[in-house]
Image (cartoon, rainbow, N blue to C red; front, side, top):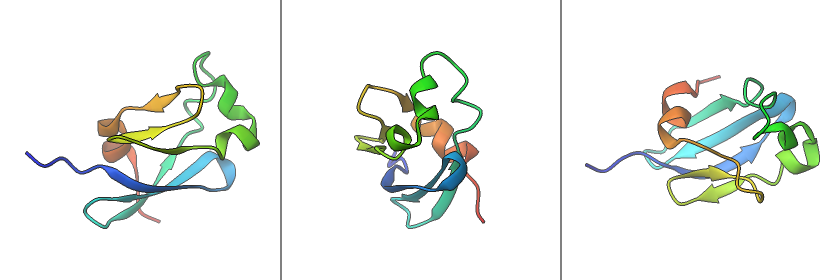
Length: 79
């Protein structure tokens, strides 16, 4: 099975990520629900939030925070 994965990620205002997936769909993912937990609290710093990058089949930040690829796919939305 060839699973869809993110290929481009762009941080936007208000903790939103614009993600282009391997099937060429462009969708948006809201990170606000995640930034209150201990593991993701660094994302509250907007400079740090904007350091997001593609890593394998998902996205991650430099200190290891990542979001499950299925979560990205299932919970992203169209504008």
